[in-house]
Image 1 (tube, rainbow, N blue to C red):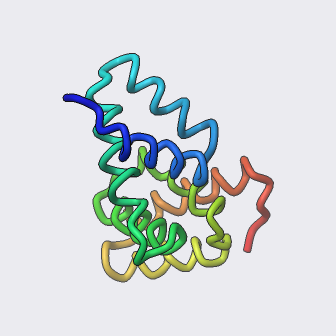
Image 2 (image 1 turned 135 degrees about the vertical axis):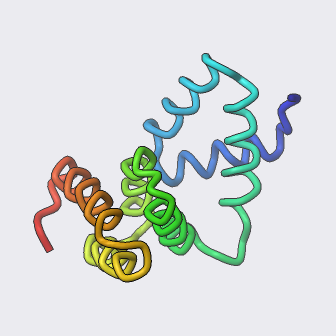
Length: 129
């Protein structure tokens, strides 16, 4: 795959805005293992999708966290919980999102999500709501 330099650079800017060094480190790890995957993730995921203008980063992270909980894709939760907090979601909004998801995707997924929320909050020094 040839890298689209415009969208790749936009994607790097978005990652920097949302999560800074941890996001770039994750991309660097993918880049070393399989560069095409890293290029696609940055160019498409962040350069095209996250950089669209209609929704802001806060709204996009609400949607992303909901999608991750719905899929049970908890391995991505830490990254996106940190991004959500960095772009302005409040701890209370994040907890409410998990509570709301419980009604639609079930308590097992909500409990798994809440465990990740608790861990990220603890790492960041955020106390209970």
